[in-house]
Length: 151
Ligand SMILES: *[C@@H]1O[C@H](CO)[C@@H](O)[C@H](O)[C@H]1NC(C)=O
Image 1 (tube, rainbow, N blue to C red):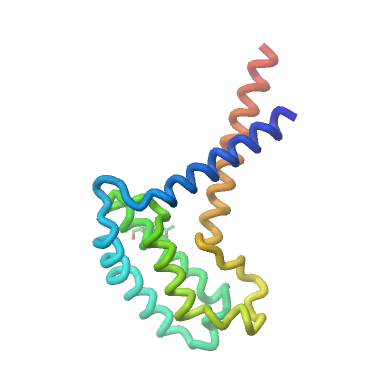
Image 2 (cartoon, rainbow, N blue to C red; image 1 turned 180 degrees about the vertical axis):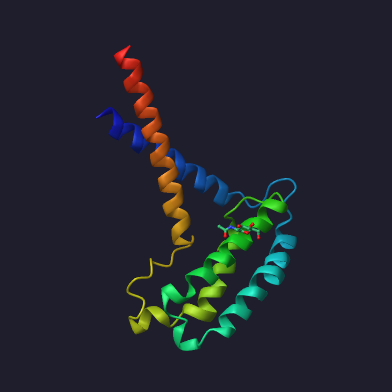
C-alpha cells in the first residue's frame, strides 16, 4: 500500500516538475530566440540531410527513422544544455511540431505507423525514461523504508 502511494506521489511530483519546466518560458542564461536559431541551424540541418538520404517511402517507418529522430532529440537537448536552457521547453515543442508537420503529418492517416508511439507534445521516449527514473527512485525509497522498518 505504502509502495503504491509512494509511487503515486513521485509520479505526481515528476509531472509537476515537467509542467513547471514546461510553463516557464525561460531562465536566466537561456536566450529562447538564440536557442531557436541554434537548433534550427544545427539540429534541423542534419535532420533534413539524413531524411533526404532516406527514401521518402520510408519516412513513415518508425524503425527506419528512429535513429535520425533520436539524434535530432539529442541535438536539441545538447544545445539546451550548452545554453543553460530548460529542456524540453516551448521552443522544442514547436520545433518538433514543425518537424512532424513536414515529415510525419500524413503517416498516421496511412495507418502505416502502427508501432509508432503516439505523437505527443513531447517525444515519446523521453516520457518513458522519466517514468523509469521515477520508478527507480520509488523502488529505492521503498527499499530504504522497508529496511528501516526491519531495524
Ligand atoms: C548526444 O550527443 C552527444 C554530443 O553530440 C553525444 O556525445 C552523445 O553520445 C549523444 N547521446 C546519445 C544518446 O545519442
